[in-house]
Amino acid sequence: MYGRVYASILQKASSYTLSLHSTASLQYAHLVAFGSSQPHPAHHCHFSSWGTSRSDLRCSAGEESGNWSQSGRNLSTREDLDFQLSQIQINSILRSNEQSVNVPEFDGRGLSAVRKFESNQLAANTPNEDRRSAATCLQSKGMLFGVFDGHGGWACAQSVSERLLYYIAVAMMSKHSLEELEKCMEHSKPVPPILQWYKNHADFNYRESASLYIEHLRVFWQELLECEEHGAGMSPQDALDCAFKRLDADISLEAQVPLSNDLIKSTAIQVAFAGCTACVAHVGIDGIHVANAGDCRAVLGVQEEDGSWSALPLSKDHNSQNKTEVERIKAQHPPSETNTVVTDDRLLGVLMPLRAFGDVRFKWSRELQQSILASLESGVDLDSLNLYQYTPPNYLTPPYLDVAPEITYHKLRPQDRFLILGTDGLWDELRSEEAVRLIGEHLSGIHLQAPVSPSEKQLKLGQMHELLLKRQARASPALDTNAATHLIRHALGTGEYGDLCQERLASMLALPEDLARMYRDDITATVVYLNYELARPQRS
Image 1 (cartoon, helix red, strand yellow):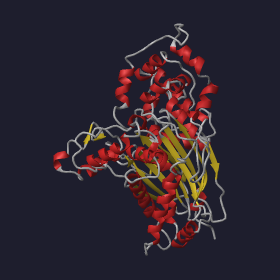
Image 2 (cartoon, helix red, strand yellow):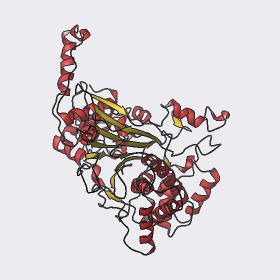
Image 3 (cartoon, rainbow, N blue to C red):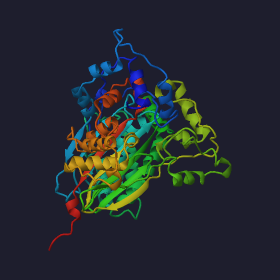
């Protein structure tokens, strides 16, 4: 009924114990700034943007089946799933990482372009390789939101999610504010807060690396202080561009220099050899700047005069489907490599995103990679860090990858209602237009239906019934107050007629840890509601 893919899910899942596993299995401490956390667990390398594609794995997984429950009884898969995942259990899994924050319209420093934001995550990898960040800039204007999709593990996404917003905020700070920071550091006084973080219970920080991160952030602002042109601080566009590039350079440097202890050193190398994509939005009174590197995505939800919803993309995916991006990379290498730079829709046949933080396997020389890994071999098990002596094929003229973000600007208009930031796990399941429609109808409670077209009036009775079912599905009431959860539920549970299918959703959520990544990716979604009234002409 749900197609061959879902049939294979049901068959395969029955041979495993379908125990509930919440995405909140990693209950990291709620921390702010450069705070501490519980020691981070060793992560496992699951299928993601590296190596074998999920479509290949789907085919192989569908060849195996089984109908035995844990107790040995011969039960149908449907019975197992229904027993394991009730509506209450489904809701518990989907809502375990929800976040909802109302933002004051006026916080003492000025009006806010953001009314509130809602966010959620659903893991497929264990641990989740996605990260998210949200913060208000306290020494400059605006709010920052980011989603980060890790690959080769979660280490790089974790580091970038902690650090990137600081680099952006510092770059926007005035020279006077930076001088105050430096004076406080010199005299060991409390440093004025740079960001007001909005943390979720599942967020955590690298405790051991905090001092290293602060040290390199300080070096960054010291260099800005030496720049005569810094003055009032960078524009959001320049700050985003500078921060992406500078943080990636620091990640590379930290993996190469001597550090205070083996744990910090191994973490730095782990961060550098893993990778992550990033999409960050700076939302200010004047408009929205989006910086994107990789295949996360930012989409603006626009309400037209007739009440309908349209999607305005504020980023472009950096993958092999983006022909301009492919040509950009090919132009950086000799003509002899034209046919090997991007093969099988992946960079050097390995990596799906074509821009990313970390991923030094695609940036450093072979000799440097081997030297750094050799420095760890005596005291550290490389397998435990997911670091392997591996170089991509046809690795002839590095670097093949960079993190330079593509930056777009959009001036806020009265019809601009919300901004969706999502990792590619969301966009694998939903088109941008579908996501905007889902949020728009969730926000307004109004489900506009287009008039029946002349061709639809000629439909046979069965076809007309199918059309009515689709229209009825669109008008169904929302089950979630959190818009990000609403997106994730529909991304995984939409049935044949656009309805929410309990069985389909249950099958996707009940997959065991070692199977889930074959059928879906980690999903992170953040929905930012805009104070669009600010864009209306003021009456005299």
